[in-house]
Length: 212
Picture 1: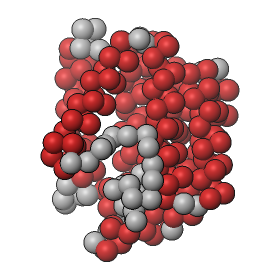
Picture 2: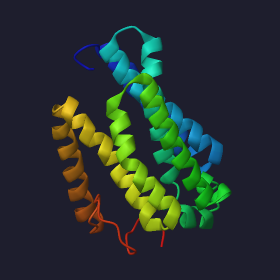
Picture 3: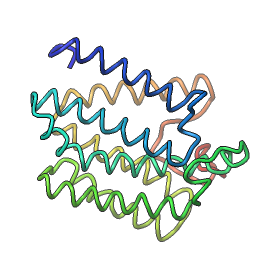
């Protein structure tokens, strides 16, 4: 994107800095509000996918909007699940995330519904990339709904995002290198700074992000 249009890339970075401030910091701190967290995450996901597809598809913003729908639905579903591991801590800090306000099970149900809607949207837009990755992750969501455990939620978050990344490797091989650097860079940072083996696909009851 930087090579294709430096002006657009600059605006993209500026918007996401501002949006990150609105999401994370006072006086807004939308991440600590149930509806605010969903809206800001969904819009951030929409902007992210719109930007990528707009660069690829040209000036056809309507086409970019249409193609972005299944991705935004999937993104929002995973965003809902990420509030669950921190539910106990957020409740203790008097934060009002969606998991705190509506409960873990209802949050899981909504995420499950969103991944199903994402699959339908993928069929309608004929996008096999998000369709296949969503279909593979569907059993994880079903297992999460059946078991209702923190471990199954974490596994759904981690593998759900990974499945889409694996699909992207097929279409954009350069993305593999970027993910490799990001993954092992973050792993080195968490090991050196906090002595944690993170990020990882392994999930157990003593996982620092399991909420237990």
